[in-house]
Image (cartoon, rainbow, N blue to C red):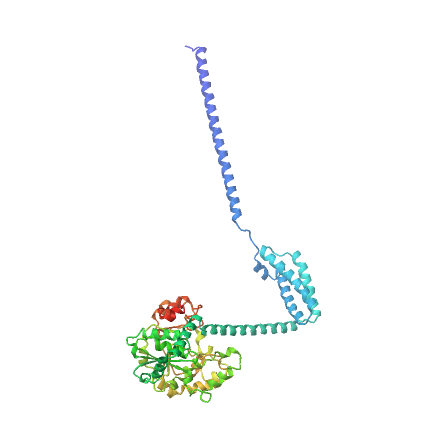
Length: 520
């Protein structure tokens, strides 16, 4: 049975309506997808562009390597530098010949060249041929003009050589003066220490019992008793000598067995004697003598006096020759009845018991010392002049150097080897300063050559007066530490890392120390 047309119409309209909605839905979905895709494409293109622009600002612009450009033989920079160097040489010659007009022309063009080179270096841009041509042209003309003035190569070389020699001489003089000023600073006393000296000198003259006690002490039998431990000290610094004595007795069980023989100069004798007579050193004997007492030490007995006298007529730099320092070569004459002594410098601090040194087997040697040849510059050839035949024929240039500061001295072996006569011999041979320049160590190295027995390094650690990087473990294990160098611990320029080693042996409760405001 056939359906009627009226039945199809509602169904057809419903079906068409559904399709329309489907088409609209699909269209909306497609539109939404297109919108999302397009939005997604915009973001990746925009964000990287922003990031890239930020990174571009942080990346440094590649600059010209000025040094590399200067070393390139074909570059305008190199040509300018060469022309300027040659022009400077001719500038010197022109001034020496009194040609000041030409010198002014050279100076002007040299300044132009310097300006161009400095701008290139600052801006990091290469100098172009266009920029360099005017300056190079002008410099070339002036160089040719210099040749017309007969400033030839040989003249230039000889002139520059004379200037180099003059500069070298000035450097040598400056070095010597610097060393002399350093020694002068190290040997001078700060005003606080001078204050202590003044107070002690006043006590010496105002307290007669001090002078009587000093005279009695000079005749003490303890000074000749070979069963006691005898130490020699030559010093003009009261507190430095006191630190040596204090630190020595602080490390022994029986200080009363120690005897210190202290020799000073005339200027400091009263202060030195008053200090050691007025203070307690736990029973240790400290006798102070003045160098004036040694009447046997004169020009007829020692060539040293002639050199000291001639030093007065020379420049002040040679006056570093100190009689007090050279007394170490006369210990047997100063102490004729002793058999063994330990020699200490006044910039030493003792940290261990030194009495075992008096029983040390020296195997017939005269002096015991710590060798300093761990580094090559402490070999003998660095102390004396091996180009001199007297030196080269008698000594090994590679022999180890050693140090004064702490030394064991066998006076019996000394007299047997006649070391004082050897010292006089080498002193006379060095009257013109051709064997060594100055100081007591070169004289000691020659006089005691072959007569030295090496000590363990821990007995004597050096260089606290100039070396900032000494191993702390080495310092702690040392029997003595030596402030050799210009940075003494009692000076402001002393190395602060080591100062406490010295200052801990100063009694800050002493009225003179307090009144003179001494502080570490």
